[in-house]
Image 1 (tube, rainbow, N blue to C red):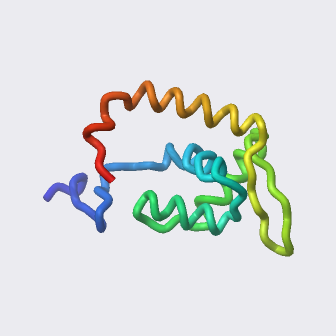
Image 2: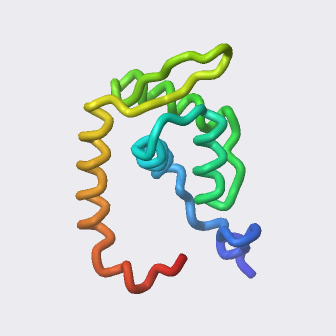
Length: 110
């Protein structure tokens, strides 16, 4: 098998979801407040791999800087939520993804 088509678990090596991390974060936060660890677990399950702190926290910092989310502290933990701007951006992304991936729903199985 060629290197680009080898599989690790159920995720083929040649499929990268890195560009979707910000979208996944916004989507998961649309369901309610979550800590960075909770986000990493949920997105990791969706991706089929483990997200490291070096992956999730820089993304959270970028999204906070863009005013798409905010956090509150509870002890040492931070709990993240969407801002109004973040909710609007997520709705915009849903429309874009809907247009890009329309017609694929019948091909995608869970």
